[in-house]
Image (cartoon, rainbow, N blue to C red; front, side, top):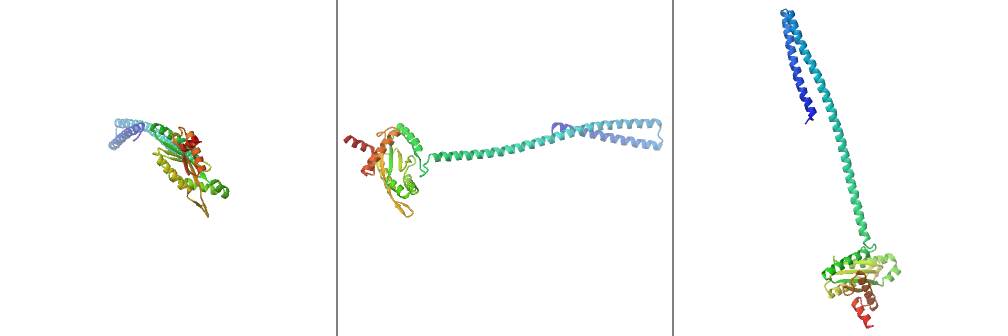
Length: 294
């Protein structure tokens, strides 16, 4: 739809066109009359009258020409303005297109950065050698578990797992073979871990296993026996068949400690008792009973 000034100019142009058509028709009539009168013998009076009519029509035509010139100028200006607006609109559209592409590129960059940050965060909470949670993640999980246990009157179990004879394998065959043994053992244990539980590599050949609300002492002992069997299976690496056995110490919340530090320390003490007695696994309350007897 034409803009208001352009619409007004077009309407005015149509009026001028109508006036000029009327003038042309009137001038044609005057010329025909003059020609007719000239053939019949025009008088001075008739000639003056025809001249006056002709001059009047000529004046109207000139007036129409002036108005038409004004209209043409208005149209030219409006066309120039319209073209300018079109040019500005195209420029704005191009800038918006560039801005959209820039925004899209920025969103892609931000998504890549966020993904990289999330991956870095996950890596920072995983043990590099085995791929299971590391000590930092375990510390977070055990604090959360203790808070839940306090609210719900749950029992927690912390198992401290040490690999016997691992140092001999490491010293004999090198760290690369040692890392493969750790990876195999970690994956075996991780296959037993429930969703709500956490297994972590504590350091060296030591692991911690947190059981949340394990439903009784018999269940805890059954898990410890299964862990022992999983770890004790031979690890085959190339032509080598290697065997490690775990010593497992167990501390329970809240009987053996109500903080993460106490639970880990007491599970560690129970693990050394299991290692010295070659019992496979030992509960911390048995370590306490032994100490009291001594």
